[in-house]
Length: 323
Image 1 (cartoon, helix red, strand yellow):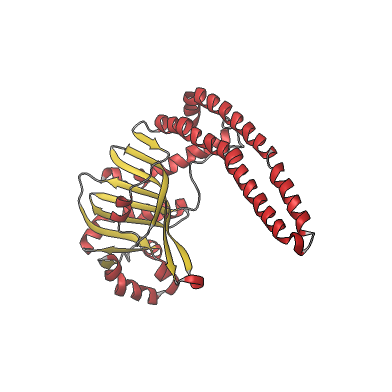
Image 2 (cartoon, rainbow, N blue to C red):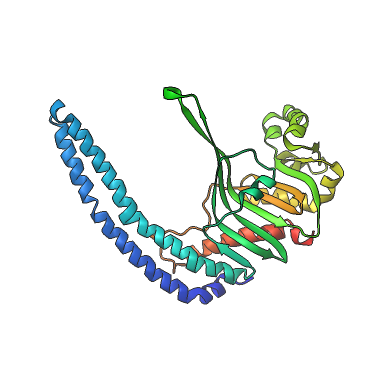
């Protein structure tokens, strides 16, 4: 694995070129802020109309709405547009090259994401009707085919009608989703999920897991009493208990347990057919760049480098390349 200093040296020409592009876009965005004097003047005019009482009320409200609309349009098309162009250019030029130099066997596509069929095949989550993502990685790690990306999966439901119409948005999953192909292995179905029931309800939670596990996970609850720390954090369902114990060796149990705390978030896994699916919840938007910060600074590349190591180390952490 190449060090950060080695990577920096290899992508230095690209860094300097994109830094120049950043400064140009930042200057255009600053110029865009000058146009915001227009909605300010319109708002002042609207305030004048409102001070006239009922006679100017309608004109005042209309003018204020126009002022807000003008402010939003200027921000979108004269300011934020340039910042977004830089961020897209950075990922296409700098980050893509950084990934290639870091892991030549991995291809990075900033605007793609894990296919919804892969997400559904994992059987880790329920139904959804809003599916999006970005930052797609595809290739091999330690000769093991793997693909992953950031995903934002939601379910939007609407109840009632007319004035009683209410729309609710529920987050199904937000984070990193991995698909690891185990070409020499075939699994039935083993699911490892966060043990929220037992941690919240104790023995009642255990009863809930056993009673309703077959209904929701299509398998029986499998215990790993010899690993009490793992049992407190996770619950395992499998169609065959013997297969669950064969897959989830003591080494694997410890690796999953450590992964939970390494990321500081919920971790879900499923072993189905020839694939291992890994879902790591995260509210942080990874692999992003701040347009106000110089990309020549060490702190930016260090953060991106650390995030890449964190992601690519999952295969090694779980020892999947040896399975």
